[in-house]
Image 1 (tube, helix red, strand yellow):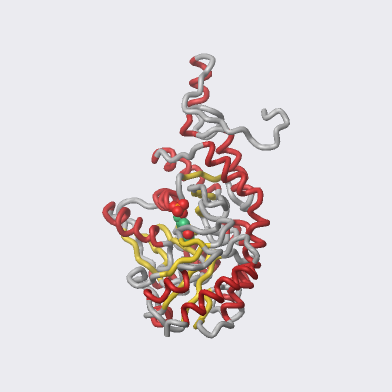
Image 2 (cartoon, rainbow, N blue to C red):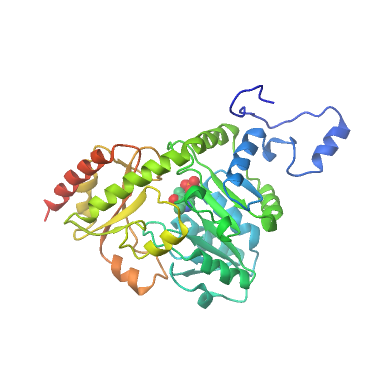
Length: 377
Ligand SMILES: *Cc1c(COP(=O)(O)O)cnc(C)c1O
């Protein structure tokens, strides 16, 4: 089909023409096979879907969405209906929480937020249909016991949805750990170059038919140029993660020894509360973590962040260039266990996404930034 060209062509299509009515009727009868209409995709999108499915042993298929948030929404909407109850980890990505509070709730679907390290059994209701897992947690990096949550969910016939954006399937496979829906914001590491918005949901045979149908009914699809960019990012994902993970750990270790730093939130550090679970379940760490500063308040953080040479100030992460942002947990968490609520109350937290730069340059940059920070006291 591609005449020896290495990569799949970028097929742009809305209309697809048929030779005759018999051919049109034959194509109509299968939802997910062959060309029919642009919303069902073209070989460009299918190549990305197949590659993502192949990354997770035990998966039956993958659907693509215009963003990571859309992917999380689609996974949840595949399994819940009015009257159902959702358990969502308290450390979930903030827009996932907003989707539960402001979209699911008015539909009659209630959500309870559970602490990331809690036994979920205590939070189950007779109508619980889905449990959302995100590990490590957004902003504060708590590691969840995924196999333990999956065991409880399976015993009660509850679907599990995991936001696996931090690890990607290369460092943790949700499907291989028994999770039903493996979600990625491809926007982050898979895209990898800060120029793409996309999400994916990979699932097993049990839910594949339902995911396909619900996603089609919702009208979700992605453009072929974007699918091509994600596929291109995927080719180098392993190498980038290896480098970014190693650089991030080097920066994290250096920060841990800095007198201005109270704690580094990074599960690959041996002293981290999530380290043992991370070591048991993950095959590596990506390049996103956070640092808790000993003193100061939000106005002080500008001195640290504003004049860095190698860190951009902006949302998202997982790109080739390093980013830095202050983290605000106040008002975001509702269920957090007393420990982490106390731990983070009134502190300054800064999140770093480590890119492909030389880690020595990044450390020198942060050293100067922390000198500026400390000079204020
Ligand atoms: C960014 C992000 C998302 C959402 O991805 P978008 O493509 O920005 O919608 C979901 N989960 C996590 C953990 C993220 O960091």
